[in-house]
Length: 526
Image (cartoon, rainbow, N blue to C red):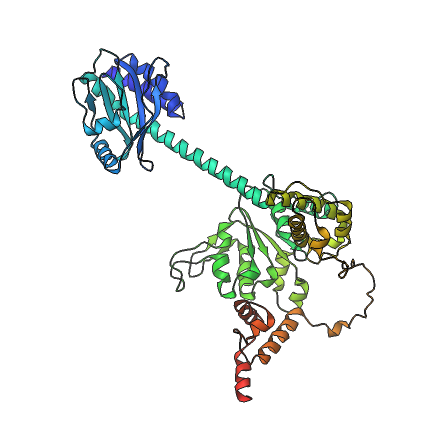
């Protein structure tokens, strides 16, 4: 008994010392050979998905031993019989004089001669494989050897389970690497990470402010036109902050229907409303410990602004339908292309929330104000495009760069990236068709560069310029009047305005437009 415990302790030490079972099996077999008439041992894994028994470890690994085939194919009925035998936990014995049983014929590979002991491996009544001990020539296994094998099954089961987990992790890692390479190819990048082109030139002042604020935890408000890279700047702030190991999550406040704002941002409890079949965490909880980037914060409804202000003040929230406060640790980076100060004066944005968010504002200049960055940006997007589309490597010519620098770029960097992609496809790998991509030709000259200074056209008085929402509201109301209150269909306002009917309804709700009054007016005056 004392000898068995000493052997078992040595086996456990070797099994725990090595991660891969193939490394530990050689040493363990040498230990067992001092107490058993052992020629070699096999660890065989049950591979259900592929319908086979696979030899994953052999000990000792010697060139003088002719090893059996590594895989034994099994039918579905044979696998079922094998699993049933393993669950019984028996030790099976086979000698040259005893004919093999059906299960033994599967577990012991063909070509093995002499005495064989076979035991099941597995944890928690979940068979994972078998241990096969093969005796030396002209030697036999006795009852004491069967008893010793019984105590060896547990360490080998643990070693096989750890080896299986290691293989799964390796497979997942390989799949992740493959996904990473595929993603980089689709994005046209050679490595992960956000590249900020112009950080040392046109964006030098902006990046200095990023470095100043990144290490603190104060909210940041980013101003900039559409396509200037506000999300990229928010990720740069997160990457340079102590929260860089946490999540960074982007939420487009303008893309969420008003009736779903609270559920999306703050989550909901099961049964909070008809379709709430399960509890759902909101964006704030998902960003806990990291950064939440609220894009287009100016489109957030006033009711949601109140709850956002509470989170900024108290650091806690309540899910829709919930009663328990939930503490969250989230840094807010907000962005907008709107004039929030003017919206505050018009009571369309809460003044207290404005003061909370505008602790450290950062203004991103439009591309037309950082023309020195256009050549570098063009080269960056060209390299991305040729990688993404699998084209031969090309570079923008001086004439291409001159055209790009001369353009006004109303869509900013997003438009530049689209133009370079289009030019690379049109050039088919031979060159960049920048002029064609910009729509420049003999009958369509390049738009002039916008220069600072007085315009050649007289500007209307400031008093005649309507707020954008007022102008949009009047325009939608005119379309509804023309279509007699009809929103969709071949004669609806959505088609007239060239907008999706669902988007039109959302805008109407936001602007407080009642379509039914136009329909009633049409019925009164046919």
